[in-house]
Image (cartoon, rainbow, N blue to C red; front, side, top):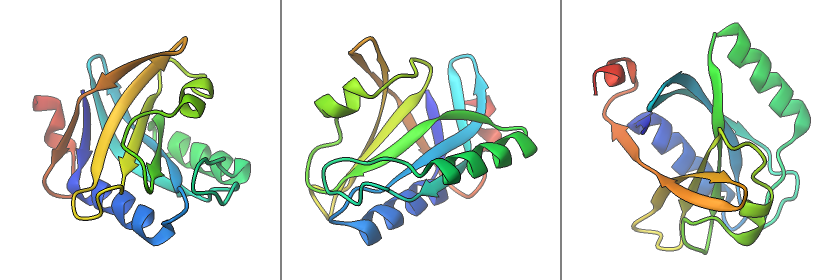
Amino acid sequence: MLVLSRSHYQEMLDQARSGSPKEVCGLIAGEDKAQLRVIKKIYPLKNMDDSAEHFAMDPREQFTAVKDMRYNKLTLLGNYHSHPASPARPSQEDIRLAFDAGASYLILSLAQEQAPVLRGFRIQNGEVEEETIKIVEGNETDGASRL
């Protein structure tokens, strides 16, 4: 299970809405405790492709984010990106470019503007498995380890 605070969800949603109709992207970091992955920080990054259909994260921004993760003793849990006009499911390109079997791949769909959809996936060798996401109230996810 992936646990995300409402404030982090809102930050991703705000980024997706402000970047629309282009895709936006970022990294997620936190604690990985067996079956419970708790997002403690998100890192909005620039979509270097500046495209409505695909994304490429800025390598310098990724490097800076990973340095910050190390400094804060966080684990890179995966990434997120938006689908401005399509459902929250991995595209063939998303599947083809999913190189880290241990990563969570979050997709935030704005296809229905009044009802955005966030879904998480694990992708290994082209096989897609949905990951449960639990959004918790408040800014902190510290209590998530008791879920």
